[in-house]
Length: 341
Image 1 (cartoon, helix red, strand yellow):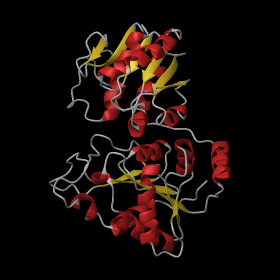
Image 2 (cartoon, helix red, strand yellow; image 1 turned 90 degrees about the vertical axis):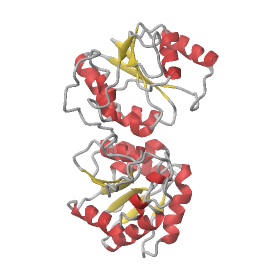
Image 3 (cartoon, one colour; image 1 turned 180 degrees about the vertical axis):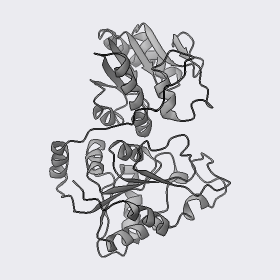
Image 4 (spheres, one colour; image 1 turned 120 degrees about the vertical axis):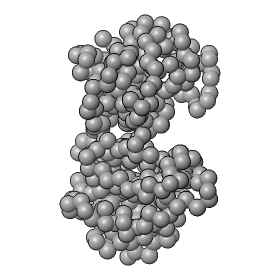
């Protein structure tokens, strides 16, 4: 059987979709599962052994482009897919499988997508509290219970891939490496303060760790602020915006441990099975937790959180400002001594 996965537009969501991919292969031996994904998400899917090919979805957030979607769909129609699994809940995401005449189009009803989706699931948030569970439910017949536990995401990063990344960037992996991911695409209410990251970097340097900062070009200024605030003898190396997503995956795979906000790179680190400290403020670990037994979640569980806002509606961001660096340091040092590589 050949099936097409219409992937989410967020890096973390794409990682959480891997449980669905694993279930589909379990239920369909010999399955060829391809993906249609935005180019900023594609490197994550390319590191999943369950995905055979990734086709570029060139559309920006909110862009309709009916003619372009129809052209892309007619090309996909030649692939002969029997099924499409449509993970985003928008009408736009369901158009291409419909235009491609894929016979079975599977997803949640979403934006009243009757007709576009012809194997329709109705979301019960109480029964499926986590996003990974909601994606995995699409592998089951509508109305049936989701088998648990879910398989955990597992991204690939080979020794050869890591060596190529290090050579391209002109860097070497230190014996002890802490990687910080200080950004969060959703907004500042999910970002631990730069001064706290700087204090943690100094403390870890005193314990013999080099600190690298990873993120997108949008996080470059955040990384520079962390470096400027640090007075450690060994300053953090700001790699935000200096790597591709594929390279970031390889660097995360080499880390002794990772400290992340609730972000896409947090889910990547979890799927690489790295020891992980996940910092939660405005969002909820009940909805999008890192799916790894090696992850430690830190949250103050204040009355005002989770608010799921991009910026603190009360103006104080206590949920993250009051999460002190010493508490995060203690969580980091609980891990057995990790040697990178």
